[in-house]
Length: 219
Ligand SMILES: [Zn+2]
Ligand SMILES: [Zn+2]
Image (cartoon, rainbow, N blue to C red):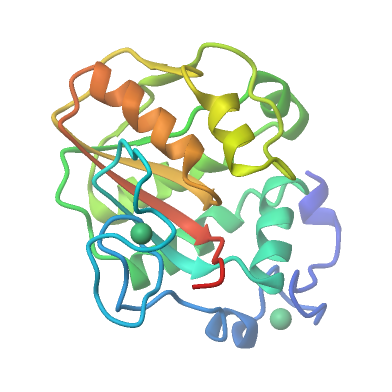
């Protein structure tokens, strides 16, 4: 595998040694309370809904992310997703369990891969992360969600476009009443909300979302 042949350099600072060096690992921007109870946006004090999510129909009960999607985290996610550094999934899962308490659910599931991207990458980061989290939290991982059509690239799309792109784009074969949906990055929440709504149609009553990173907007 290519990743074993290349000398490892830290994706964030370029120092040689490992894919993410210890000092970059320690300085990643963990998302700590107070948070918006619903969407996990950091807030000045705990709130049930925040400026970002109020008035939006979200199909999940609560979303939590481990780190803010800043420049370093972006570089780590890009290396993990695009450059095939699959082993980073374990490092990413360790960061998630260090920040986010184990959700009170019966099983984990993940946002399904787009076929084209799965073939390009040869791995599906959200599934990898879900499986690593399943080991750490001792929860079963269900591959229950499927895409009903190819996923357009969401990068650069407006919030309205993102919502339109993913509406009805997912279906679930079955779901336990309470389930945790795993994805790599929470950007607008449109993808996880559309996936959560498919889980609800398949029987879920309570959908918790967990992601590694979260885009933060101005408060
Ligand atoms: Zn570094
Ligand atoms: Zn919110």
